[in-house]
Length: 305
Image (cartoon, rainbow, N blue to C red; front, side):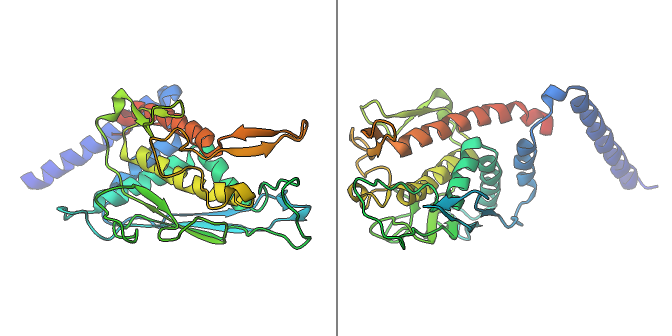
């Protein structure tokens, strides 16, 4: 056996023993075993330039119905990887890794799964105020059939990809409206080393701000995806109220105290209208969940290395 062959054999044996001892250490301490989502996120780093096809296919709930009629729907959410580098970059493999991590992180969350379920079940959940609307027996809002999520830097029409927004729904259209097919654009995110001290969104001087601590690129993208899908949920749920025409959950002036759209929902008991901020309330829950998830997954990073 040559010196090179002997060296390779020694290295292979080292790998076997290190892997075996690490597996025994994890098995001996069940409370330290990483959750499946953390393992999947870690495995994303191995895919390199061969990204996996990512999509979710969801069927409506067995009990889904609208005005007494059953809802039978199939929703496909498909992810398209970027093919173009940012300005000054030559390698885009980091983007496919970040998107893969975001995909598994999002689906590991309670609020993320609840939102996907609500989207698949439409028109169940569409809010109709009988005091304001006269409905014909033929009235039936559309189910959502497809949502295409793209990360191409040049997707958003008339938008410089190096400035401004990091996410957009149905770009180029005047309003987001209930329909069978939607598009979502998200800018691929890197880790943000400044975030551990806490950041504020949207940053207004009013009480409706969300403080967050997550900093990983996949966490930032999961929040962006939830935010954009929440716009679709909002218009399908409340878009038939006369007062909510062309509203998607928030306005354009981020520093305004009225940034988030107020929705008045009639209480079934008192028949009074109650003020709610649906997009803010659900987004706040998801921010909190992502903060917790990232902190938890970081504990397992050394185990998986």
